[in-house]
Length: 152
Picture 1: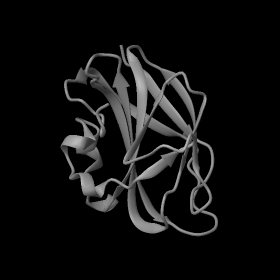
Picture 2: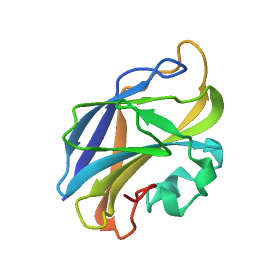
Picture 3: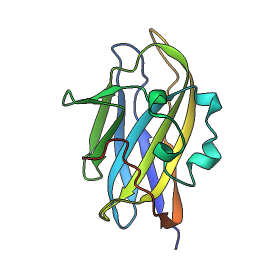
Picture 4: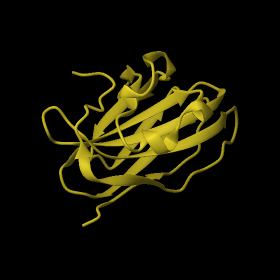
């Protein structure tokens, strides 16, 4: 049975304008969602990204440090699937980013249940392109890699 995973991006982004997500998931065994913004987005193979953990595919210096709505700063923001609205702040103005969203299982350590990868050509001042929904490609079987960028 195929599980549907979908995350809605509700607003545009840019300096002073956060990325805000509304979570809508229909999947078993998913405990957390992890969101990463990656430099050199066009150099990222999004097809490969959706097959295994991003953290195992790129060097740590490609992650853009962002800020969660609670003020926590990290190279990737994780939040429980029970969260209704999630905001990411502090995305610097720039070009050639990728937005990667990963669904983490409730296993210890977590496994990758599915992911999404999308290119962001530019984050600039003012209004940026709006994305309405970002589908997360659910994997038939969770991949036995630990997707967490920061293990805690």
